[in-house]
Length: 394
Image (cartoon, rainbow, N blue to C red; front, top):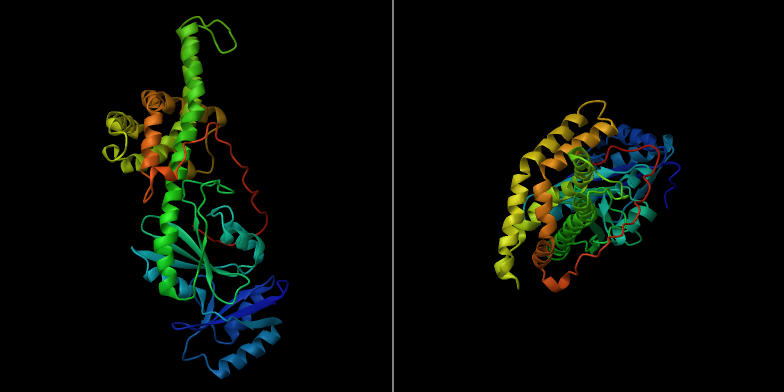
């Protein structure tokens, strides 16, 4: 076993690149120096390679000497270069997939994966508890991102799981998370397992997560909306203070619009794709078509407000300072006020939406999905690791 406190060089073979080396350990720059001096050239992602025409005994001898000079250990992997395995699998998957190699020369670099991994299986456990020096990210045109690593503690085989989509950053112990799978060493068999087992499960899991996100948002909004209606009807605030004049009514509605936008923005983000999958005539409730039409119309009428919000966020991300909490409250109130009719429509027809969306799970059946729990409980995310970081995912 290599010592993570020193400089280590892990060698593997590649049809394309010849002899591939990965530098790791706390003093990995010393291992990189040894590789360069021995004639190895950097590859995209951080590995080094001696092309087949240079992978001679002389190169190997030079590497041994240079590694000794830089106090770097050398070990030979029993598996082919992971970057090549990832490319072989991606080439056999349906659709257009690209690959990117990532090297985690220091152990705490791999911890940057934890926050974005969306997994309930062995992949997350391996990233948490085992040493992962190299990984391959596979990405398709739809933005699906997968992570491939060598299976720790085994002479062959690989682990593959998913990253969460960019819409989500709270992935720790997320109840819908798909389970990573073990892949065989043969690229064709591995690709078949990804295409026919993992990806369908991933799509179903993402469908359920989006649906839970929408229903959780509506369930947060509903009590506040009901309270607002009660206030308007009774002419009193929630603490029984008399409300006299339209200004106080307007203030109560403004406060509701502020908080409601926080939830309804989740609806605007995730509901369109779910609605697009709903086929009421193919479900046990064909009479739901009218309600789904109202929901689509409400989203269409909110589109300008949603685009305004996204433009504002993009603008704020491009400047050093953002809005104050009070300014953000006013912005949310303005946005929420603009979509109040849509919010009312979605609250009124939420049960129809939920049953239609659950019936529309990709490749599944309505029996695969239970109704959304009320109230929804959440699990605190894993604290972000501190310390130095490698530039991993963009």
